[in-house]
Image (cartoon, rainbow, N blue to C red; front, side, top):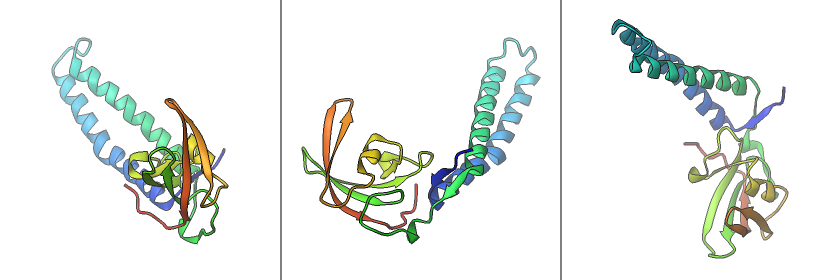
Length: 162
């Protein structure tokens, strides 16, 4: 079993989702199934089939969350330091074409959300950044062609998640 690297905020977020699914979604689905059964023949009951599909999705997600949480390797970002990009680093980048600046924290794949500044360690950009320092330029292949970014700053500061 491989460990799954993540930040403390990432683990907290997964626990919150697990709790929501177990304590709110499951009971709501049970009530929906019970109500749908009361309507009679379940063979042609759209409400029943929709509730069963939702139940299947929730149970699958619960199994996935429990697996990931059991293999979580929480990395305390506040104890990291240095000038090299690695897991937990917050990296300020300048787009080579537009000079627009963007900041990402390198996190585990289960807590990634690029629009919130949390970049998966397995993403092409993060893989290109690993091991680099401020001043380095990285090239990344994207669906629309190659992009280059200059690393402006590398810091290690715990950033509260979504």
